[in-house]
Length: 435
Image (cartoon, rainbow, N blue to C red; front, side, top):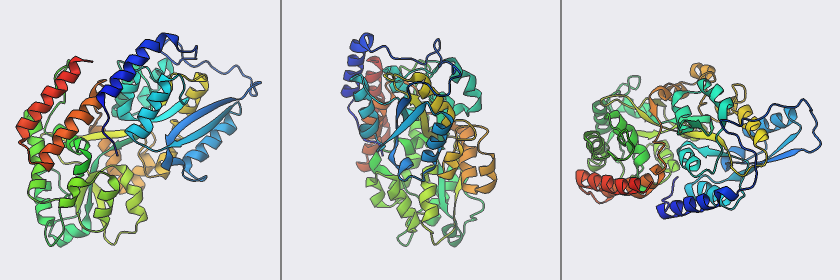
């Protein structure tokens, strides 16, 4: 899903922004001191404001998509505002970097739907606007993890939309055939490892790991379950090589070495590959988020399956993915932009997410889903122990250019875990000293 990016490119962009920041056009801003103004009471202003909004392409792939229906509803309620969705392929290069490049050039959309992991970087580069006091007044309506992910240096830069914690998908039928109780899935590392061993054999595997992507997203839940912290409190020293780092790497990659995962999985780079292997009965367990539900539900699998929470090591934890609605710095319509993101994240309109098997970041929006969908219930309840990735400016650079390549060395080349993580910490700290 994600692609490696050059840290030098990001640094260069930051320098360019710093150089031209004082010369940006006099756009409206949404900040702690300048919140969007209230309506003047006029329902039909002389000129209609037009907003360009970037969204992931799969969310608006037909005119009946829930998000398009929500846009139409917004335009009916706000006739002075017209929204044009610009479908964009998700990806570091195709989406985030494209937005940064346009912003540096004084252009870019009014609003974008951003991956939660991009928000701190975009905020540090001043590519998006802080949302100010109105957003602060809303923060208690959202789960703590998603709200933290939308915040940078105590300023809120996005309103959370989707919350995507990871959990474990499992083949209940395979569990029964292996003599395991499908209604009592693993709760600890030891139990999951034992289940993976019992489920492996005759050309089938107990667990699947997406090795070709770099694996940090798969590794982080286990790292946190082992009690790890990625950086010290100052944010200046990386701690990947801690006891938790070694324990989690040995556990996860140990299943690879024991051949409890398919050899082909070491080159897999997409969730589709994981979903397909599971659907074909090749693998009995794999780690993913709510985004896999739609495909599994629509494919009429020939076996019974379910989802269970990420297992506990020293503690229970998982990684938090998701999306935030953010406002581009070059917008000429900050008030209208804020009106849209407040509209699409209110309780009623968050139902868009349940319609596409995704989890709302609002506390008050998931009650009905909990009762109607056991798989979604697991993801919703997992938000309570899901952790956001660091809000450090350098995190993306460290993740893409240090951590992921290091984890790939361990998996693909059987490099020594401690030596590799020690070197990763050294490289990460060099990046941190430059930020």
